[in-house]
Length: 331
Image 1 (cartoon, rainbow, N blue to C red):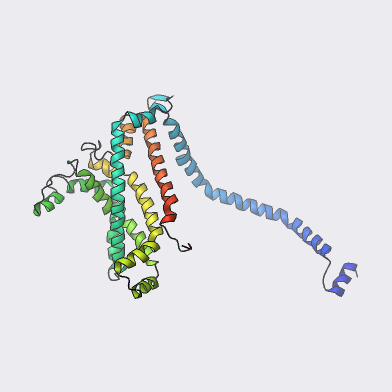
Image 2 (image 1 turned 180 degrees about the horizontal axis):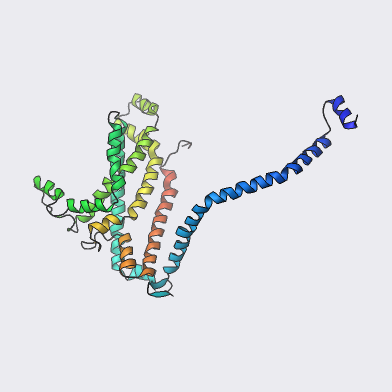
């Protein structure tokens, strides 16, 4: 009998050195197999990611980098790009009143339309949250416009509704309000666009409704026992508990509002009228690039829009700690 075996029999355990040697031998024996298995798993993972990586770099990153280069050039489809430095950006802010007007109109559309849309979505979500009978039908009915709201057909119908002697004009005329065509009136066409944006609150409403379902009813019961009325319960319970959802919908709503294009193009028949009141930045970008052939200038407009949206997103993320309350916070 060997010394190691004798020690095991006598003491009931092997020496530390022999155990380490045995484990080292086992690891060396299994290490090549583990490396091969890990290598296969890694290759399989990259294989599944390959289609997404091709699309991400081929359809997003590379075109973005190339458009950034084009924004510093004067380029049309018939001539190669010619480097002009910051001339496109200087022209945007100093010698292009149409861009300034389109930026102002877009900001009004975002700053007015987005809060109204969020308020309407939250109000309807709260009504559906307290209603059980027919809730599924009403959720579907309110959600449907968000599925078709950005389509060309809806924009055509919207233009017909607010045209002269259209359904909207006839409805208001019944109450003695004669506004005429909203689409041809520079003072009313932007409100018509905002109403269209608010009408598409279905997706935002569903997200609000999901957030309301997650608020514990015990909080409302405790607030009611303390004598809080409906408004105080909404302000002290609903708003803080729903603040992460409000932040999410606000961010998506602002980004979506800056991207409005199809409805403005259809309602104005392309040029952004009347008097340029539907000439949003995206529509102005399209006209400069695809109608005028100024692709370098259009790329500069696109990058200005991207920077503005990025700045707003950064501001929202930096300020969210002051008004957004998460369940894990100690505040």
